[in-house]
Amino acid sequence: MGMFDYVKCEVSLPDGHQGDFQTKSFDNNMDTYTIKSNGILEMTSWRIEKIDGQEFPTFPEDADMWERIEGFRKVTKKVEETNPVDFHGVFEFYNTDSIYQAKFTDGKLNKITQVEVDANPDN
Image (cartoon, rainbow, N blue to C red; front, side):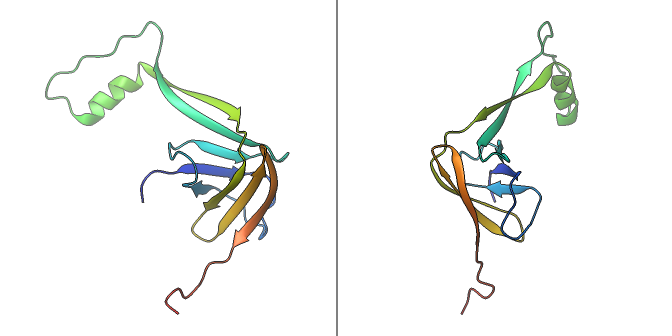
């Protein structure tokens, strides 16, 4: 299975499907790529930062994993950053039912096509 990135699509898909998708066409950092309604591709990435003025906790040696996680959650925050992606090429995204290919030229969506999936790959 491995890591992947998320895809959100604000434009109509060929089969009318809506929802969340995944892709392995980029860096697989669990970032979110959004195909905006205006055809621009955006990437939202995130990182964890320490909250200013907070100190990282110390734990006894016998502290369990959940106690440690909760301690770090109290002094850190999730920071998201969204930027346009000047993508040129085709990337594939999918869910459990469908596979699509999105073609971009100089950062602008040209078209999205649905990939035909062979229902009986052994024949």
